[in-house]
Structures are given as C-alpha cells and as structure tokens.
Image (cartoon, rainbow, N blue to C red):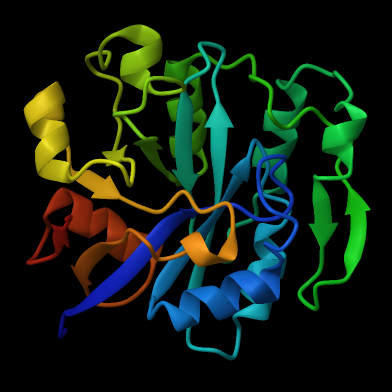
Length: 248
C-alpha cells in the first residue's frame, strides 16, 4: 500500500471548552482547517468529547478527516490528550470521565462559554459541568482509561510550566505507557529534547492547541501513512512498516 504524508493538527478545542472562543463552531473549525491545508484534525475539548461528533459530521463531505478526542485533566492537574478512531462509541468513556469529574457546577461566566452545537452550528445546549476542573483519575489511571477504549494517550504541551507532566510531577513516570509527548507551539521538538532530554525515546509531536480559528494549523506534525486513521497514526508513532513522524 502506498504511503503519503499527511499534515495533522490533533489538538483543537471547540466552543465547548471553557477556554475556547465561541467562534470555534464545527463549521468554523472545518473551514479553518481546510484553509490551512490540513488533512487530519482532532477535536480535543477539556474533559469532554461531546462536540466531536458535530465536527466530524460538518467535515463529512469536505475531504478533511476528523478524529474524536479529549484533553483530560488528571488529579495531579496534568493534561493528557486522548485520541480515538472516528466512529468509536465514546458514550461509555465519556460517562466514566463525568463520573470522575467532581460534581461542581460551572461558574456562570463559564456556563455560557461551554456551548454544545450541532453540525450546522446551531446551539443545542450548554454543558453545566466544571469542564476546566481536574478529574479524580491519576495520570496512570487516565492513560489506562484511554488505552482501554482503544485510544492513543499523549502527554500535552510537555514544555509548559503548568498542566504538563514535567511541571506537575517533575518527571515522566517510568512505565506510564504514553504513545507520544506533545511540545507546545512555543518550542521546536529539537529545542524540547535539548531542554528536557530524549523523553525516553518516545515520539515527539507538535500541534496548535488552537482555541480560536486563526490558530488552527499554526503548528502541525506530518505523518507518512497509508491514510488518515487512528490506526495509521498509531503505526507511525511506533515506526511500523515504513510509517514515520515528521515533527518540526
């Protein structure tokens, strides 16, 4: 099977994330991703997957591939990306996340910023949960939960001085089983390795962590794969059968 290079931005928030701009609607995300020349994106809202399906539907006839995902906050306040295959039933996974997200109402200033929408950008509701809070999962438990649902677990913005494994724990726990580490847009992969070490030989990726449309695609990672699927991304991260990762 022929391999081709795909440009991917696998860390994008929508208007459901309390820190995401209200302009990050499904159609706006898809339009911005296409304008940036992306082949593959992932929707990774804080502690929720509930807007991912709308973005997948909005992209259905555009040629843009979309993976559902999540940016989980662990009990240590470490951020982890969970990426899943398109079409995966994430209902049980999301229910488990919500059961382990403290039942605190979102402050009113955040409730209106946690917008549930459909593929046509129509508002369908507001998430009343405190999505910006920490779950009760430890880092190890969060990785196991993501893997248990067939997902990839990636440590977010490893170079940041807050909400990263290194900032919160001071190190990457041995045997954690991460599939990759992500470096934020402020630093190149080479600079991160020089500053923090080789990350235990784990693959390094960079994505935009976009919170507004103009940020989508600002930083990408390219994958040499057979197609835009989670299975192929997994194989590229593992370096299997010619698949590769190209991180700037």
